[in-house]
Length: 209
Length: 110
Image (tube, rainbow over all chains, first blue to last red):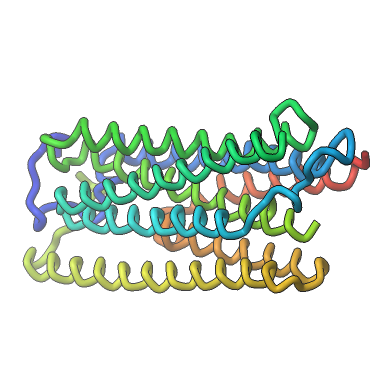
């Protein structure tokens, strides 16, 4: 079965992301990568927890002074919903419905961009209103490294999904690109997994001191 | 190819069965999503209501862990067959990550 073979919804295999050897290898390799990403983010969380509220003087804002729940709640809803829309996209991928998959991926990207916009606003707000900067304190460095690294993952995930959508726009689904779409969606879910801990550990726990 | 799921028997029946299975799974995903939204709202509400720190911290952490389990096992399909390696990798990562966090919050005191 060649990777470029044309399919119909009837002949499309049950697990298209793992129907070829290449797909199987990618699947395995990607989960290994996600295991490594877990360790990476855990070390950033550990650093943040160790340095939280470590500021040189009382004039510097601490976590409880900075964070505002409504914005964080909005960001959480945006990212959580985008996680569901990418599940919808993979549902249509498994049903060999390329057009609907692209539509749901488009919505996922739109929600991701909205999240990113909120984060840029948030960082800008901290910087100008509270003088909370990367170099202003150990707390600032740890905060921007952790949350910014997550934001960087969002940027990369969005670029990845957009690249896949454009590159395969006229090609349609086959066993060559099905694993690519599947892994991009796994990556997107992982970004949401990290965000769940960020909104809990950084923002919610930050609010209660 | 041997590792393909067999489209055995009547292909039309298999196809309809698969479509139905996918639709059922999708319903599960929406339920999962609803629960995740629910947990998120509770976590934010607990902080907004101003409960004691000693209640909020373990409570929101527990909700986060449940949410992440939902995300991994349903959204990322870790509950499906053929995810043994994925589980090994993720749990190894979680173990190392947990030890890292534990170390940093206990031996750094300044």
